[in-house]
Length: 171
Image 1: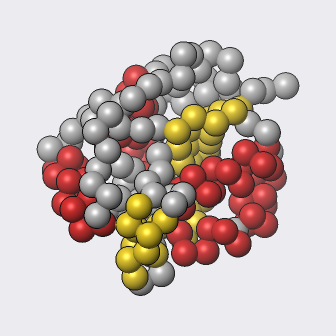
Image 2: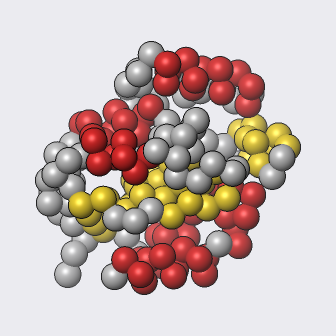
C-alpha cells in the first residue's frame, strides 16, 4: 500500500474570491487540502515562507509578482524530514499569474521526486491550472505528474464530490 502526502501552499487573510476582496481565516487551498485529507487519510504538510506575504491583498500581489519576476526562491519555515516513505504527493497551491507561488518552486527543488507521483491541485478565480503542470514537470522530470484539478476558490467548500471524482479517476 502506498503512503500519501498532501503538501500545499495556502494563504488566508485578504483574498480575491468570486469577484471581491474577502477576509479568510483559512485559505481556499487549505480548504481543498482538508477535503483531500478527509477523503484519503493522507499526511499533510503546509508549505510556508519564513517571510509571509502581506496580509493586505493588494500588497500581497505586489510582493508575489515581484518574486515571480525575479524568479525568487523564498526560504521556507520547514520541510518534511523526508519524502522517502511517500509514493503519492498531492501538491496544492493557488494559481498566481498562471503558475504556482514561488515558495512551491522552493519546495519542489528541495526534494528528489524520482519515482513519485505528483497529483497537482490548485485553487483559482478563473485561470485554472495555467502553466503549472509544465512547470512541475520541468522541476521534477523524474516524477510522474498526474492530471491536475483546478477548483474555483469561491466554491471550494462545495467541491468535495468533484475532488472525490478526481481522486477516484487517478486510482
